[in-house]
Image: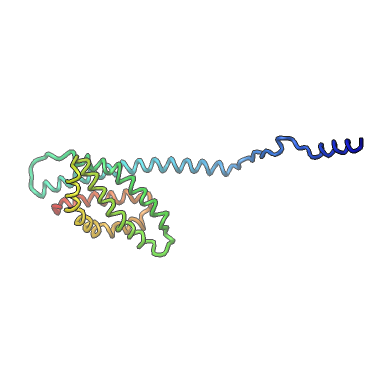
Length: 211
């Protein structure tokens, strides 16, 4: 009898409620909620800034092409006021869908991959932009414009063979000092705008030289 009583006592002593093994919910501190709210606000702010950036790129690209046409007509002393409307439209599409987004993500990637505290960060950033981004972006420009002009691949290949290398050389000569300032001294959120403003005069410069 005593043995049975002891057994019951041991069973009762070792018994634990089924829910006792479940993890109790840990109350989240107020700081975590604030951090989450800050992240959401930062994401919304970044999305809005990218939209504005795309619009700025599209508008400035179209304006650059428009000014280039005006300067070209003045250089040739043409009295006709007719302009190629499709030109600014193509540049607006390219600026909105390609120049703005791609440039933004490239500058953000550069900022994380080559932070300012890295030795020779300024030189490394410039080399990355000049030797990788510039040729790839220029080739993309040739391809997208060829598509928007509804040309075939044979025309695209001919334009690349004739114009890619001279355009890249001119790009390196003119844009290298500008991009050194841009990627090292201009805040990352203003780099696309800075480049677009310079490109506005760049198109006009090329047109004045008859390029």
